[in-house]
Length: 395
Image 1 (spheres, rainbow, N blue to C red):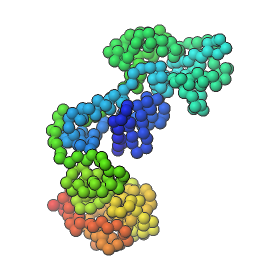
Image 2 (image 1 turned 90 degrees about the vertical axis):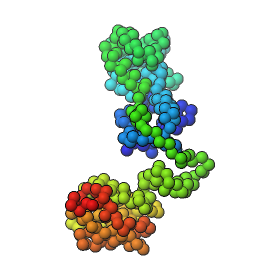
Image 3 (image 1 turned 135 degrees about the vertical axis):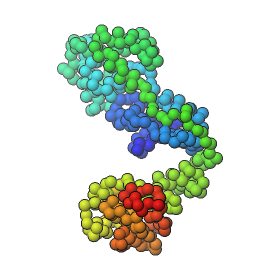
Image 4 (image 1 turned 60 degrees about the horizontal axis):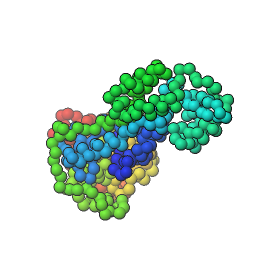
């Protein structure tokens, strides 16, 4: 899952749990920006949401107002689009390094014009605070030893100065390049036989077309709750407010499921995930005998990675080698249920003690969590169609 947030301020900001990317950073061609771009460039967006609703690729109903969604799409597309300039051309070559071999830069030194392969330019960038394509490019080139340069133009390479002159003299824009690419290709073919492929990649670099869900076939269903968080000063205030509406607002309720705060009806989708979507715990512990599995879980630290009544999944317990007793019981249940399903297992958590009864064998753990496991949990899981429960025992 790649979750990203678009912040509609100035030219826009795009954030995820690791990086913050500005409009300029999106087009700077660096490895860091390239990593941040991968999801939007290569993958379909599953859903779009804000405080007023959502549009999902799969569901027929959408709660986000079509006009708001259209405005979001326009702002995001503006963020992902850049006109062509000398700086953008250099940034393009920084990212699409397979085309660097087709270009060279010119540099004036002691009254002579010297030439340097683009590969060398970017190589020297790594150890310098100056960057090609910006107003610090001359300082970057001045710091390179003269014997790295060629005294004559290199055959089969187009000078970036010539390319800049071509763009300036013909006033190429992104739109004209898309509508009439042949003009530029014809000019570039005099210098580079790969002109058509280079132009295709350049257009791709200058404009990312996000694969967003379509609103055309959706049925708009307005919602009464507005999740706008204006006036809430900190994280605790936000969580406190969302708790007041978690049972009446679907989005707030789902947020607590994603937050792993498990209570009431949220037990059932959580348990479905526990028993169907945690392969790491199966690979890690699945080969152990039942008694050895139980002993291995008891030896782990009894500290949950989550506070309060938030629960880690079995895979998280295995990855971090620690877990509250209730979380360890869920690991045990996941492994045992895949090994020998029991449609009538019993899971209970009361007064600091967790009891798991699976195929008539009892396992006990200590817990600091205060999550109350529903009495009809196993029967409900049968209704949910949990894989691994025998077909004959499903209601």
